[in-house]
Length: 590
Image 1 (cartoon, helix red, strand yellow):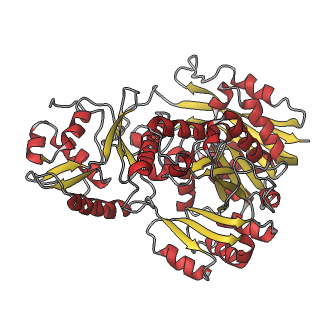
Image 2: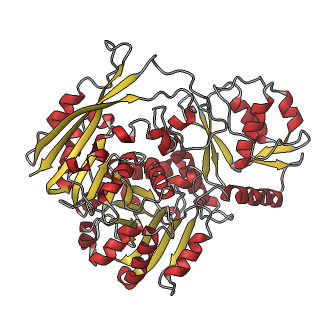
Image 3: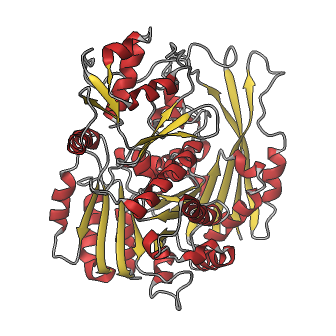
């Protein structure tokens, strides 16, 4: 094996000390190496823990992983490389995520492998978010639910199941009170039920809990009749998802369109699809190509509709290593196992593709420096949007939630900010940031700017910031139309975009992302239901990133063998101070 040339920077520190030279390590047999075709990186797919890991570009990194296919002595492994510290960091990273085990020289028996995986699961679970499942139809109090939630070291996902929502109105009211008072913290609450309720007080409690509601057993592709109380719940801005079990007609674009059109007309927030391979192919006469065709059909709905998830396969947060899998150790084998493995191999590259090297942040404190709070127009002047305590605001293309968090105080405890973001992994991270900082009036929902999952005139204001891609793709007019639709008469919508970055030492050489951005935005506001009331040019001096860790400014969702961004910025792109100049246009709904 050749000595590798690692990417710039080093990886994460060893979990606990250095493994001894006489130890043997082995890559878990369930780990596959995926060639994404991108040429820059490979992915490790762990079929047992159903999680992924990135092997970044770097000469020798893939060969290092391949060497772990058989038990290998660490003294022998280390002797092949000059950078011993790098070896230890990569081993620690693989070990922490359960991708390798410390073993003996001989191959592992099935019993030994199970024992090693059990040890790895215990280590992994300490750092993962868990799902707490509670049956509300079995008598239980809010106090008992709180006790269960307090057992978790990190704010958990809460899945509440019941036959009828209306039977638990008092319990939801108490949970809402406890959450708003800071007694409990919940990353996400999902209520799965067989019957909805449009009771205004119950809907208010569900919003205060931060809950979305999943309606069981909705017929595919369209139910015979509208589910009772669905319209009332969506009018009260509760996120309602439809749980469906498609047959192979999902492969037909026309049938998919029926499902999408119905869900859109009903303002369904998302579709939860249950895909049972043994029911879809009772003769088990399907292979990986058939499975992928099915997954691609689901992705086609997701791309056009917004929020679509396969509920009986690992969630994106499980695949990204943020949430513990609810699947027991005795995972399905045979046909069902092949189906899950095919999904894992198909979905991981899609999730990796959501990352890029833009200056986004890993933590809110870094992102806040992109636009400093003291300089941000709308949070400092919420009157421009007519926001007041109790207002409902829609944040379109909400990203990691900076805008939602900053405007949260303007709507108060009785108000609501609904942040809609295309990428589920961004939306989930924004939810985590808000939960860690005890925001209780923010909802983060996957969705599309051109199809906001809210009925007409159900919000007081809508905002969109920093989404140049929307305009580049020609979706700006559709987004403005949707923002105008969901805002009540007299309500306001606002769009902010950076026009130019100026180097104060070289004002003749500005950086402009889109030459036509002003024209695109201005023309999109030519809408029969809107009149422009405010047009502001504003800006800030951009703080330097010198001295910051590059990781804080890079989008990364999947754990890495080593982290190529673990370096400290020593210089900026250009010398001297710089200024960003922004445009904000605000219009009022007629």
